[in-house]
Amino acid sequence: MTQPSCRCRPLRAFTLVELLVVIGIIALLIGILLPTLSRARKQAYAVQCESNIRQIVAATLMYSQANRGWMPSVSGGTQGATPAGRGESDILHWQQQGPPPRNLDDSAIVKYLNVKGEKLKTLLRCPLDNYEVRKMPIEAGPYNYSYSLCDRIGRKAWNSPDVQPNAAGQQIKTRVIKNASDKIMIAEEDDPNDTHWGAKLITASTTTADYLTTRHARNQTVGTVNAPAQIWARTKGGHVGLCDGHVELFSTLEAFDPHHWDPTIP
Image 1 (cartoon, rainbow, N blue to C red):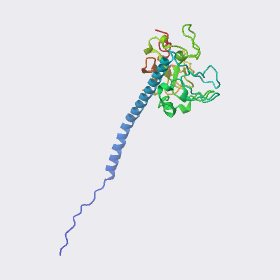
Image 2 (cartoon, rainbow, N blue to C red):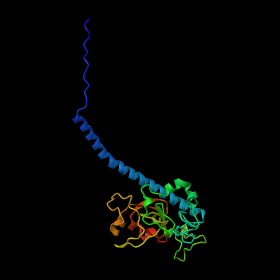
Image 3 (cartoon, rainbow, N blue to C red):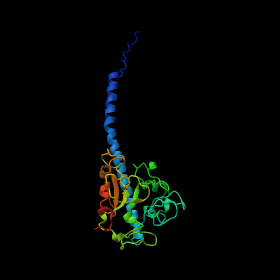
């Protein structure tokens, strides 16, 4: 009996050239997609940072409404219990060194943020802020957060006879703030070492001013404080929370315009 013939087709494998072509196409697609994904991730972080500041400004305004219009005060970097930074009205009780020890959850605005613990710490930090390498450690410990209160909003020593602190050290009432949509309340500092952000005059040799960060700038060619001060200051890359609750991207020079940091200027 004749056996049926087997006509099995031989298996066809990819050639080396075909594999190289496929690998090349995949590499090309990765090269195209990675920058896009990186920009999308950076944009998402910027949106998160804006949201953080918006919540902090809203909580600060709620604190003011609950305290007859008084604003919270900046909290400084002294270690001991001195008027420079240990008041109950301090916007953040961030100091890690005592005495007395402070609990961040006891901060003046925390109950209006409605978060505590690690969630509170996350809200107080920009996702792009490498806070673990602060360049300016101070007596009360490192300031591990990204945002600071404008000293003209929460200042403890005010030179206007119309704006005097109350017994708790709170500095101004919301009624003195003119054109709230132009006035900075919360600033995203480049290298904050406490909750105090102060405007200073910028010169070509300035090295110690409270610069805004540039981490959200489109052009990152200016990336270190060793860059010329004027170039650094013109780079628009730091978020600020204005007194009416909205958030904008500012450069340091914009932020240092008195119409933005002095609440009493119409």
